[in-house]
Image (cartoon, rainbow over all chains, first blue to last red; front, side):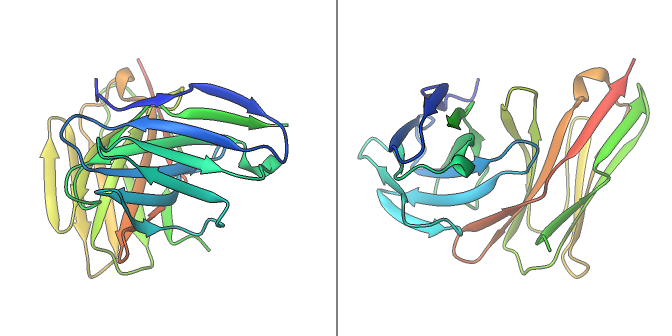
Amino acid sequence: ETGVTQSPTHLIKTRGQQVTLRCSSQSGHNTVSWYQQALGQGPQFIFQYYREEENGRGNFPPRFSGLQFPNYSSELNVNALELDDSALYLCASSWGGAGETQYFGPGTRLLVL
Amino acid sequence: KNEVEQSPQNLTAQEGEFITINCSYSVGISALHWLQQHPGGGIVSLFMLSSGKKKHGRLIATINIQEKHSSLHITASHPRDSAVYICAVRIRGNQFYFGTGTSLTVIP
C-alpha cells in the first residue's frame, strides 16, 4: 500500500468540457508529479509541484494546469478537453523533489467522447 | 524518435529463467528509474539509479552512464513477475521521459 490516492477512479467527459483530477500524496511527501499514459504507451510527464510551486513541466499545452495545496495534495485541471486527452492520469509523490523514489497512485482513467 | 528506447517490447519466459530488459537513452540524465506496472494501471517504483548497480531481492538494475544504457535483470523469474516494466529518465528541469515499456509474461 503506497498511500497515494487519486480521485475519481474513472471519468467520462465530452469534448470541450473541463475536468479536475485529484491526488493525495503519501504522508510526509512534499512533491507531486503528474503523468498521462495513453493506452499501450509509456507515461508522459505533465508537470511536477514541489512545496506548492511548479517545479518542472513537460510538453503539454497551457490548458493542462495544476495546483498543490499546503497539505501537499494536488489537482490536475484540463480545460477544453480533446478526444486525445483520453488516457490514464497518474500522480506520484516523493520527498524533496523528483530525484527521489516516486510512489504512484492507482490513476484516474479519463474518457473523452 | 523517442528519447528512451526499451527492448524487447514483449518477452515470454519460463518460470525460473533469468530475464534481462534493456533501456537506452539519448539525452543527458540526472537519474534513471525502473518502474513496474501491473494490469489495471498500478505502478511501483523498483529502482532509482544515477550510477553503478542496485539489487533488491531477485531484481538487479545496472546503469552505464557513458554508454547511456541500463539493464534490469530478474533472477529465478516467477509468474508474479508478469507485468510491464518501464524505464524512465530524469533530465534537467525535473522533466521525465519514459520508455513504452516491456511486457513480461512468465509461464509456470
